[in-house]
Image (cartoon, rainbow, N blue to C red; front, side):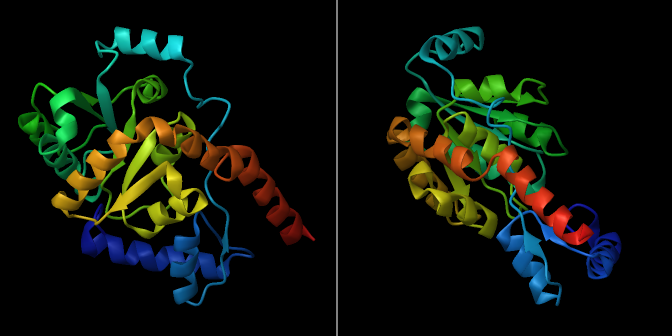
Length: 246
């Protein structure tokens, strides 16, 4: 509905649930989504999304130094990054405004990667310490230069952008929606949640996580290595396919 409006969105939702009811097996990309299906009387199985843990890896010190140098980032600068569409559901303006009011902004930089209808509005709100990079093809490179990943999204399935950030060793600051909670349930030391749509909460959480970002890198990577990786996801899908065929 946020993307297509009520006139198109509601029939699309109905069609999606109708298709799931007629499937031999419905699979949800997170436990949060599985519960939504369950509320509609659909017995879905939850198989969490996963990212390629071999492609997305934490950089070694020399690689990180080189990437930061290429991007014009100082060695001691705290880099906060947010990746996703510049749309209302992702709330990029809240990320910008919260960063500008945070202590991190005094010796840090915010990078926003992505495109969308709010791009011009975001650029108008940008300052010297806020960079709207737009659409880029080398997201991994920017993630390796960052310290903290922020998502202020109002709803998700199980966001790949967050998992990619974790895989590269970024601490995370996430809105307290179900899928984000689900990610941090794997290892809560990787980051913290803030109250969705609450700027004060985001400012406080961002400052706290930024102060402890280096200590959280191992926990961030651990979430992907133990649970949210592509191999684990593929094995679980394969098991379901075998069950359906039998």
